Length: 253
Picture 1: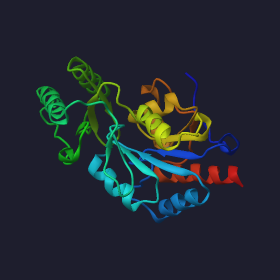
Picture 2 (picture 1 turned 90 degrees about the vertical axis):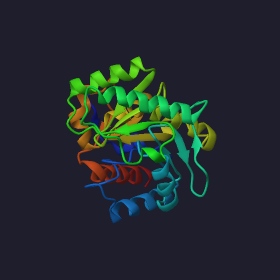
Picture 3 (picture 1 turned 180 degrees about the horizontal axis):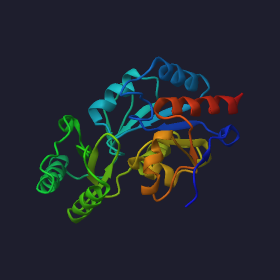
Picture 4 (picture 1 turned 30 degrees about the vertical axis):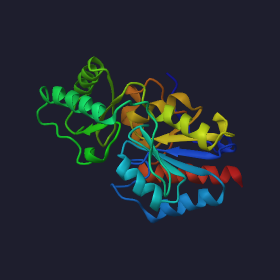
């Protein structure tokens, strides 16, 4: 498997859209910084759009899309898109949300029989397409077993440094990003999109987009990725994202 390379400005000269994870990529210590807001505004001024693609709920996405200087927010690991001042749009082909959520809850209850300490995320009430729960304390072997249970129940499973997610088969960040780009940015080509993340739930972004970047705190997960990002920042979390922004702006100069 090829190792990620150091970030190179020259490779980013064609970029017109940044698709970025949220927690651990745009944050530092679970907080936004003034430097992040400034960087997002610099990208907007340079005509580089930003889409956040996160495992956070639709409820979170509506607020983020409204208050941050970004084009929109893809939530629930690809389940929905939130645009500023618009109702969320479900991206996954779910026939009946209520029935789907019962299936998700039933699967989580099966998982709890093996790991009774696991608790559901507080924002599950604001989710439409996925079900989130604790990741703390779970070993790689535990995560593999949980993935197997989800598969038996007809669901997919992903996890990040923040939490675990049960979700519909085939729902992932890359698939939804393609959907959103085809609808809202139809003239963009793959080499005009850069993806960035920090966790295994960003794996599809690394695998399906030729310009992919990991912030430095992705390093502990590299051996669990089927395809690493093309580039790896020197700095972790938002400092790594700022490193990417600097490279993008330098490439446009």
